[in-house]
Image (cartoon, rainbow, N blue to C red):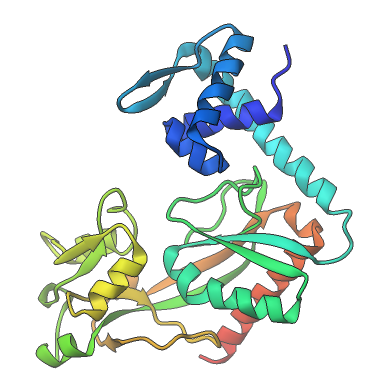
Length: 295
């Protein structure tokens, strides 16, 4: 029997998200469509691929056997898509760029406006994600990541060193003594399921018994809480031409080894063969160079 790429992608979406609703969101289709298409796939295969339960969808033994081949199919589908698009000689169309919530909000959104002005035929789709998207499969074209790539199918185009700082509202700063340590501050931090996302682990290392004064699972909510004076927030202290006005002010607090971090521009090795992806990559590298030059 033949399993189409659409069926394999549906199967992988359920397997990796663990639910029909998660697969529907990833594929941008309705949940009833997911259920119907999976039923047709299971009928064709002649076996149940998932066990349905209140906690979601768990792989059966038959489903487990399909995971690795389906992932390889996804990687080759991504490669095929990039090869087909590399024949287009003009930089036009949509380029998907994924980054952390901070970088997406602070840098990528205004950068998208800059790209649209410079190249009217180009449009950026910003994918703000905590989890890394699979660039080899083609889930995104470019990524700004905190860790360098380890896969041989990925390449690091450029790396930007980023200083970090503690930011608080003006009202909170006025209430604090002139010299403060991390232990003296109330903190705004990530809530589950993102408690392993920086700076939570770093603050736990620095502050025994670390307990935030406020937590949320959304970056903009964290910023709003810090602006309201609920606590301090660690952010990149990075000046660029798109820097937005903020109600937060930096606080001189020693962060030790966590005072600097890196942002890596990453893509699949064949992605730069696509003119529109290559052009956006070049523009991002130019912005990284501008940031370095103005420090």
